[in-house]
Length: 153
Image (cartoon, rainbow, N blue to C red; front, side, top):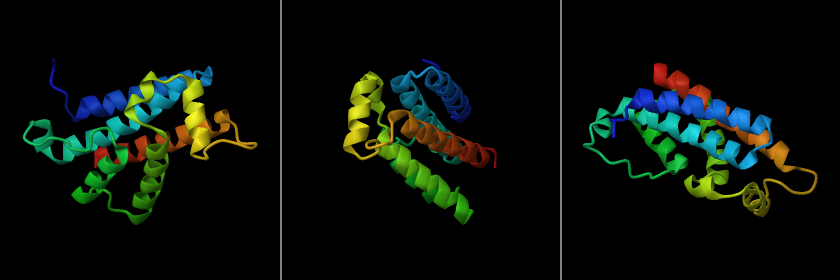
């Protein structure tokens, strides 16, 4: 297997977000939700690998698994997120996405995800899955965009 570096994570994350957009445009919710969350994970990994070369070299193991909230804590500990407003906005979006996304979601049908989102109060009443997914995708896009700025700095 080829070595994976910060540029691969970054480029892969951007592609996953584009693919999520296409899937969601055609109401393919489960795949779109999963790939948008995967884009967030990829961008956070890109920053981690770029900031601390020991991860890329295999000298350190990323103990966060696929938990994007834990990845954000690691990024924050590096001091990469400096501007207070950026820190607050990225943290808010990561909390939202982290509550609604997990890696094994890739195996689930839309109906199961919809049930989970209902159970956690993300949808229900007049709030539809489509509305919730639109906001979720926007949060993922915001994270990827802000991480792109961090990655380039």
